Length: 257
Image (cartoon, rainbow, N blue to C red; front, top):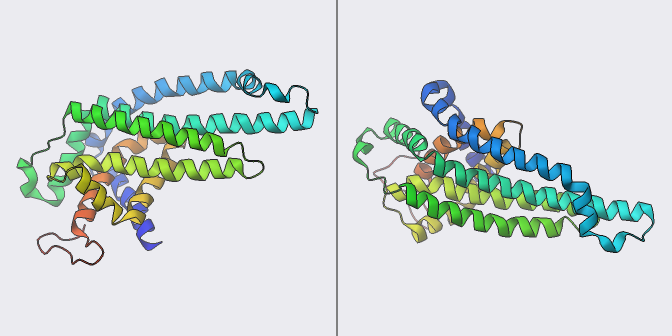
């Protein structure tokens, strides 16, 4: 639990940059606002068509007593909306990072320079096409999570809760994975090594990701949180590099942040 809360606190430290570097963080609002408006329009359209959609999904319930037909259709509607929220979260992150790459690189660099002034000449190695590749990977994995969340939503009584918990936790992990990739790859840590680094500190990574996902679910939360998540994920990556893996000792040349 301590490591989980440490991950949550890392997002909080990312939010502190709104106070310390407001102008820089405001740049990150532009791509986030554009993408969120597009996705919000899609969510509203889905909500408006949900009654007809749930009836089309449950033709077998047409002859059922009204109570049971309503229960199964509410479950179907909840499953659809839960899956939609998962897809929106991963789509928002993937598309926003692609569209806003120049803005978020400035935030990432500012955080790195603040904690390590000698990192000015660091090789980012994470350009537009890398963002596209990782964004597509995030989206595909998000679709898989959305499908499972939708199926869980059909479980009587507890389905809605299971779907929500599953969606938040697994989507949170994906968000932390994607957001921290930039800072880790810039340090020459490639895909498989990034996976090992994060897996050694699962609770911390999950805490950061779950906190980010929950903030995304608040009204206007995704827009305001995205720049903070980029800053926080940079701090997360630094802490993962400086923390010892199980059975090892911390590197002497880096202090935990």
